[in-house]
Length: 195
Image 1 (cartoon, rainbow, N blue to C red):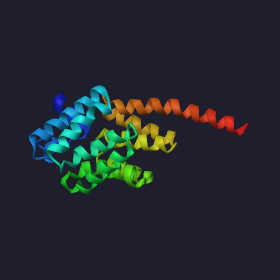
Image 2 (cartoon, rainbow, N blue to C red):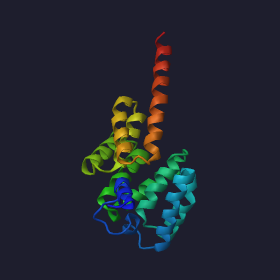
Image 3 (tube, helix red, strand yellow):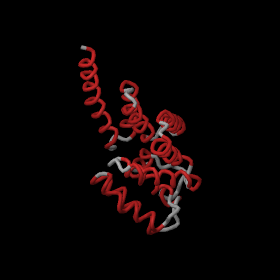
Image 4 (cartoon, rainbow, N blue to C red):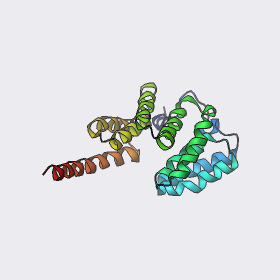
């Protein structure tokens, strides 16, 4: 298996799909190109840089569930909750247009941003990790969820597994760094309140 094929497998693209995953969700080549630009921009410059291309992809294909799901995540990160909620609802309503593996992400965005069921988000990522053990994203996402709920010790193995599966992934490292910075701060804050 070549380096490109290994990279795709680590990122979670199913080996049984013969076309790039985003093409399975949109019939518009222009929307697919805009989506791809959003991924490159997000990886190079951060989430906010992905927004214009995601919005363009959606304007070209209003039924592009994968683009809505990613827009929900992008909008949530800078704290723009109302746009994240709207994008998550739209993605959730279109989730039947997605392959089963990508529905996990869509459902997690919905439960996170719309219903606020954080424990359900963890269940979704846990199920995804069990169904697709060779994919890094469910482990990194579950680790992030565990950190958000203060379960730092449970987060570490998930994040480490995500990094083992995809060592080029930024978010696994970011979450491990966050873990190591937040945990001591929380312990110190706890000491201060007990005195």
